[in-house]
Length: 64
Image (cartoon, rainbow, N blue to C red; front, side, top):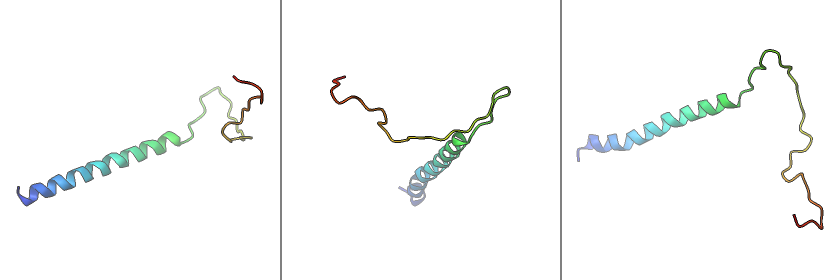
């Protein structure tokens, strides 16, 4: 196998992974941005009071 082919087989997957990884990072950052409020809607702000998982508790004797 020629040396250039071995180098090409080594570099190509690294280049593809870097290109697709960069694209995924850009898309995820744009998906997390806060969108604009549509016309006619009111903007609101909220505060989370409880963010712990399992905040809904069952009664002790319930076998639901």
